[in-house]
Image (tube, rainbow, N blue to C red; front, side, top):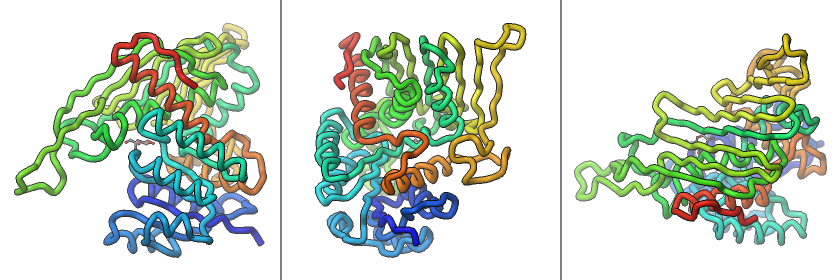
Length: 385
Ligand code: SOE
């Protein structure tokens, strides 16, 4: 009989749904010796929470964060709330001896991330684990790229081009926490460059050590307040970047460009990574998430060219737990794969691909922070790891 891993979730929004689905699906598709049990979900909106809990199969709902972190049935606290709540909620869970899986970015700024890293290191001495939902590590095509990189198939990485382009951030989008710097920390930068920085660190195995230059744009100054019709105040100030680009140097000597945008007209979820090494190259595009394009410079020149690998074979990471070859996976599978790997790691098994911890979350935040300082005029900024 498999043991259970009691999950407590905070938040019922986009990530609350993605994480609930992941915990609910993991044991249906993966053979787990530690199986998620959806114990309790808490969230601000108590009106919609019972329906949410019933739809996703939560055994209990409601109560305070305190009731959740004190619940003896809860072993892991999953934080799917807006950025401004991550630090207080993660600290409360770690202090209560619970494992934590927190949405990205880990924090709003480097100081918050430093406090969380310190708390996670202290909790780790008691066997408590901390994770950050950098879910794209668990797209099979990225998992394949990770494996090939560990085999040295690209040689020394000289150039990385990373962009995450969306187009939902125009003036017609109403105000939310994502557009308030005091709540989000930053805009597209912390939201999307966070994913790119994690993927570059993860795939190259190198650190980003210095930001060489950065620039940002905020195109939208105010946004309509949802449900404010007829009220005195109908608009709120939007004070985050819609576009943030920067260059950073890798510890191995290579140079990376990063570009995050919420106003790239026509781009819906264009998370695109290109790695260029001395022996080959990769290209990944989330909008074609099952494909890894691979250029192998070791082939005879007449046979060279970018190959399109459909990472849907049983040999590719996580795929054997899903469908026969060629049947494709989607966005939600990256979260299920991560939930399954967290269960595996907490059961003492070694996942095929490393899980992102609060240490990784901190190191991502350190790069984001250096880029913000560079964009504010500090020029070349060393990353404070
Ligand atoms: C932004 O819209 C967003 O939801 C990010 O916050 C997520 O991290 C990304 O996976 C999809 O886009």
